[in-house]
Length: 113
Image 1: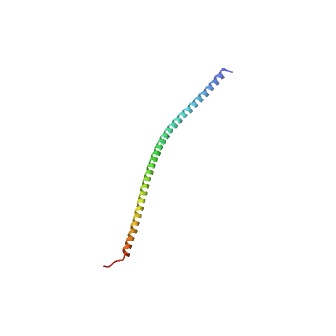
Image 2: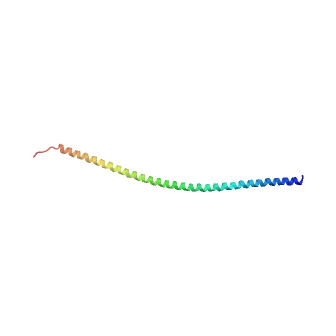
Image 3: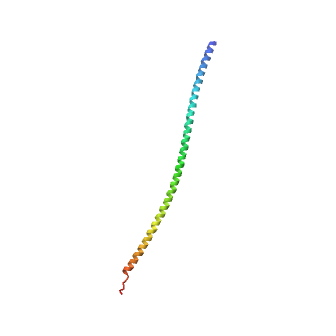
């Protein structure tokens, strides 16, 4: 084996190694850029997630308040309905009593003086 061939082969190998190192460095640079972009997207998603969780919390509180208000209004409405029914029953009783009184006055014999 000739020294010139060895030097040539070594030089070719060195060139190949340098190209491989350059290619690996480029890949590492791209991976670093991709990671930075993914980290930024992850931070943005975390902010969106927090905003969404706040919104869900607010909606749950509003729903709870609305439900409590609905229950209160339903209770008030039931009380009002009960009151109206009671008033109607009283009016019916008074009307019936009044009809009896009127009937008694109409059918009561009149005495002439």
